[in-house]
Length: 319
Image 1 (cartoon, helix red, strand yellow):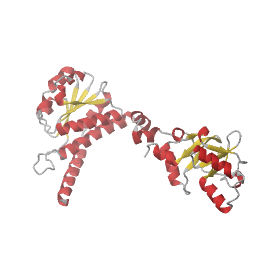
Image 2: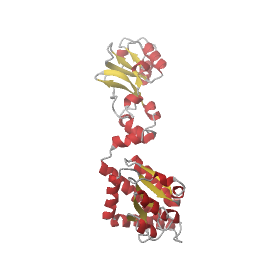
Image 3: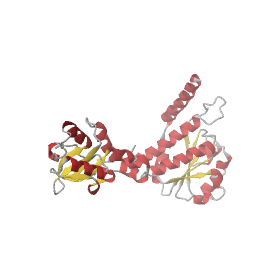
Image 4: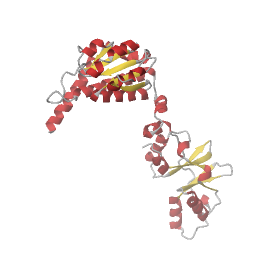
C-alpha cells in the first residue's frame, strides 16, 4: 500500500514538473487574453473537470478576475444566454471528446466569445474547435486501469492556479485588493481587522488614578470584567498599568494593606500597542512577549484609547 501511494504521488509530481517545463507562448497568450477580457471568464466543464472549472472560477474571482462557473449540461438549457462577446470561456475536458462540451462550441462561436481549452488531448475534437489550447501533457492516469481521473485532474488544477496567479500578479493585485474580496473568515480578518476594531473602548475598561487604593482598583477591574486597569491622568495620559497579577503579588506581600495607593505597585512602563496595528500583528506581539501578558493598553499620542485583551484577539476569528 505504501509503495502504491508513493507511485501515485511520484507519477503526479512528475506530470506537474513536465507541464511546468512545457509551458510556452500559448500560456502567455492565455494570460494576456484573461488580462484583456472586458467581460467575465466563464469556466465550463462537467464531471470531475466541472469541479475543477468551478474551483477555478472561484480562484479567479477572488484574485481580481471576474469569473463564474457554468455547468455544461445546464448551458444547453438556457445558461448559454449568459455568454457574451466580451467574455472568455475556459473549457475543461481531459479527453476533448466530452459530448456535453463539444456541442457547446458552435454557440460559443456564435456569441463571439473566445474559448480556451484545457485538455490532455491537443488533437481532439474540442481542441480543433477552440481558439486556444493549453495542453496538460497528461497521457496516462495514475489509476492502474488508466480510467479514473487522477493525474489529469491534478495537473488541470495546478495549471489553472498558474493562470490565475500569473494574471493576479500581472494586475498588481496585492493584499489590500485581496482583502476587499475576503472580508469574512480568518483570511479576511487577518488582512482587515485592526487593534481598534477588537479593543475595549475607554468607557468600558477599568481606569484609575494614582491615588486609588488597592480595593478601589480591584472593584473597577471586577466591574469592567477585564484583567487589568490603566492608571491615567485627568487628560487620559497613561501613567501606569495594574494587572490582576500585580494585585495578587501585592496582597501576598501585605495581605492587610488594601488601602495602599496605586502608584506604589503599578507598572510604570508597561507594554503598549497602537490602534492602527493589524490584529494579527498584535497577536504576534503578545506571543513574542518575554512576560506572559494578557492585556495591553491601547495608546495613541500618549493618550489611552482602550484596552486590548488577548482573549478578545483569539475570539476575533483571526486564527
